[in-house]
Length: 598
Image (cartoon, helix red, strand yellow):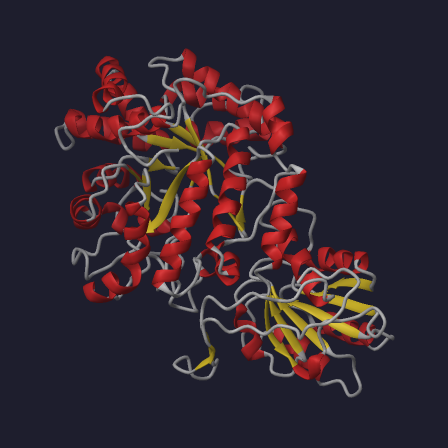
């Protein structure tokens, strides 16, 4: 997709030609139709007109309609966002059919504007569309891989599959610089803690999505990396000075804007140095218009983060949130919790003079320009042939595996235990945390990892001990480990001192004469500092299949670990002391394997 905001996919239009069609369409739209274009709604159900009864009930309760088709006809929204929990994403052909069907309704309903269908498909721990679609490493894993080419290729693959499903917008990349290890909401969704590195990878991911004809949305402006509060449940405060913001948070967004990116997503965070009124950035005129539009020069679409998140709902009611976001300079209102309330509030604000129709026109024109640039007015539909040729193709799956195996990071390897060999450590016990799959993949993680190791010549047994293993689960794990296993592999998930995962691993490592213990951290890489007794430790950055399979190949020596930490890992006792710096990562000495790939 071209960067020039006055280009279309054909590349033949002049600036006047580019605006002629959107302006002509805008001139024919009623106020109600214009207001509809500002909204990106969620709907329930796998089917546009015949969802399951339970989904009909949810649609009636939250949107005042029975079906997705009814929602499009009633609100005439600018777009829809798909979610797994809304039962939109059962399988590729179903999802493509849903996309085509809602587009047909939009085409047949005045003003006949195609929908911009969107999704949060960051990959890694945030993936709404699962297998058989290709699943790829998330941002921090890609940051550990250190290759802009891999980041670009992963985004191109992800974008091509979304486009084949009728989806033209992805809410990625995350440009947040994760400088706070305690960040509960960004974490591994960030490429890392270095502003320049994050900027480079953000640029590469934007390029990959645009090559696939997808509109990425860089997020979460002005930067969500240094917070200890989850904006889904509360309103975080970022205490950076303006100078710190310029140095730490701004560089990736500046880099994104330099590519000509079409869409920026706001964050529900308070940054007093940028707006002393203490409003969430999404509702802040000084941040949205003053900084993003006027100082940084973004004239494309600005979309809110989900308006269902508690962070944006703490100060104002859901009706006021929609109006205040538009007054701040936002164009698209994403996923409001009460669409009818918000829609009527915006309409009333125009009628009362709080918002001018000219202000609404500015946003609608930006949205129409984006839809024209994406080619939606020419072809908004997909085909079964596109789905079959693209989604989860053999080439995409192989590329995902290659990219993933370059991300796994080896942090400890005492006595050269790794790589493991079936000749010396054939019987493996795989246990530990089994977080729910973020993407509807085969899971649970311990089962996936054990199966992958078995395919590599080991005899691996899976034993899920859970996120908080009970004393009984610990006793069972100890008994199983002592029953002739040659090594124990433990998946860990954000271990803290004294938690039940810590108790499990400590008990395993304290057993006299017990087998060596290897940990595979499946979220942040910080677990290694809290588990000093383990013999070896890997960071996988996620628990999706592609990253677990890559970790298995590293454990088995089929590939050498080459990932390097994209974030520092501090001492748990002294956060100011860095135990493992950015760029740290061990590898194996050259060796012979049955299937050398390194």
